[in-house]
Image (cartoon, rainbow, N blue to C red; front, side):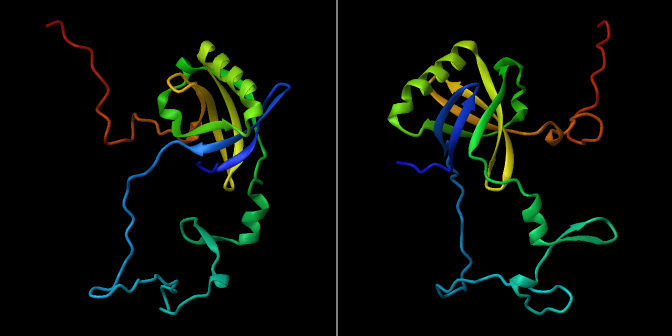
Length: 192
């Protein structure tokens, strides 16, 4: 059986349901290793200072944000301080009509399963209620050091709950104006 990528508690109101989050998709992309021609010897990448050409120890590397004329340096300890902690709970904060959610907001899909047979009844009740109402629960949670906005909805075909990570509103690009891929605004047709 597949292992969950996240485990915690789904909660809404006074209901708590232990759940596991499982990836719903597989990538069929090929991943190659670099080898020296004529041998089976792997090639490894090294961390090298661009200016000096010398190899740099991992402990001597910091992250930097390009602010134009200079870099703003960020120490790993500073990133740890502001990183959200791993959440143990996926708290539904509200419900939305699925017809009102623009598909551009959906990113990645996960299956959500109960963490034991004894929770099957509560799980099925929530799945049926969401399917019947055509609604999704909106929640946030932290996985792998990143906070996600998600929609929890019923999958009618399989009678299970799915979790869809959503793009934040500021991650959606405006398709008009600056984009060279969009056509000019439509003009009203002439009488002919």
